Image (cartoon, rainbow, N blue to C red):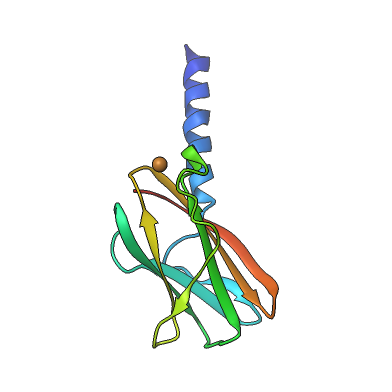
Length: 127
Ligand SMILES: [Cu+2]
């Protein structure tokens, strides 16, 4: 009985730490020489289109941002392919993310400059 609890506890712990590996919203993340980025959603993520916004700590026209999203539990069913963020007037990156159904979602973010990848990471969330 005791070992069952331990096994259960470890399973829960593993599930939590797996989620904690995702990039945190509204938190500065180092990108390249003194430039940080942070991401947020314009509204609370829900089924439908929700705009993701990425701000750079310093303006840089040469940096591009891309997203590739899907549901990890049903890989390929909602795969977005690699899509480029657009810039808004303030110079922030914006992209509508289409959450087709409730459940677990993963958004892979990549940043490039002069054809080189600066950063790759994933945002994990539950809708
Ligand atoms: Cu799905």
